[in-house]
Image 1 (cartoon, rainbow, N blue to C red):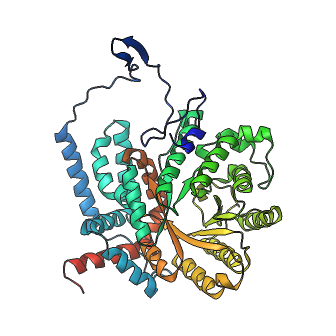
Image 2 (spheres, helix red, strand yellow; image 1 turned 45 degrees about the vertical axis):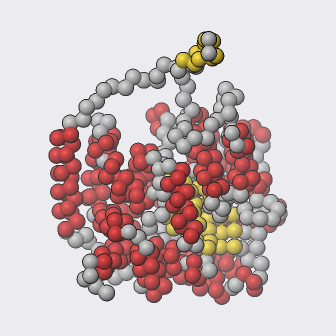
Image 3 (cartoon, rainbow, N blue to C red; image 1 turned 135 degrees about the horizontal axis):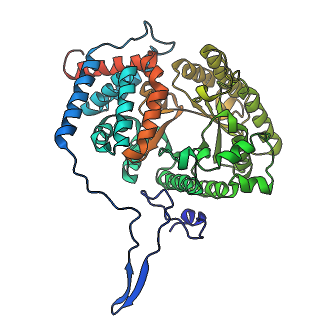
Length: 487
């Protein structure tokens, strides 16, 4: 067992084994060992449950799939409602050329599969019908009806793979194109009645440790961390009155599972793998900030890349002031701040008045924060600009070119997009000497389905808007080019 694996232990004191399939701690009767003439023989423990023999009715299954295919085909023949004009920056020549280059490298199957995904996502009723069908199948244990289809389409497009080999291949392929990877284990953890158990928390830490081991194989790869999967929800709420830059007491660290988080972060630092902590809902945001800032104090010291990154949601009106406070604290205390800037993903769950009143105001807040960091941020800071907004990317590139790194000791910058989205932005950046990453979810298909459903729900408006329209338009153009209908 490697050194990182030995850091994490369960409540019985036994070390965890980091295997691809083992992410939950399962309690079951111990095996029985007996001594025979040829040595020790181990009798396997009794099964946790008895499998029920199930013979699927393939005639019924095929009828359901045929009906779904007919409905899907009809939906794709009808045109979705699309905006009359594209958003600012989307018609930039650099993005157009990068999109053509990215699409040209795909197989015809990949082009058609991605076109199908975008056409489906552009029609809310198709997304809603598909999600209802998935829930129906899961309830009746009929996931075999959608798993092969999901693997070949949505999972193939939005996820980096199911096995360690798949993920390493995806990361290596992107690295050859000059694109870094930010890995995110995408199994949704749910305990009894929607809460998380201690076993769930340990399972999430184990999964992150496994992602660290994958990232170690391809230098420059980062790992995303969802903190709410590793810390008690009730404790996060309890400590949400903490000041985000507060120094944690020993009792607070114990309640917030800090010592295990610290061991995980130490393993990441040893492996040279940065951890990017996701932003989450406001009702435990302050407690999370206190944990992450404490980890940054401990591990973002000395020379070399930062190990700990916090995420700042600029759709919250309080975020610009919090970001400035964290920058000032890092300078005063002598450690480096790692920051990922996003617009945000939890608007429906935020308290009234916490979010900017319009998208235009959110865009302004995001672009202003980027400008402030490029023009005046400290050199001890590392920043990831996570955005699919073409105009924000163009503004950032313009500002970076006007204030080159050699002109003063400014922060290092990178730009990131989700895997399977905004390839025109991603592939346009390496030729401009801009560091770029893809956020790559990975899991087994069945484990990833809740993530894919949530992604469809969150991005329905995006896919039906200007960004989705331009993705569909360019893929249709690539299809026509390949069949000889256009140059």
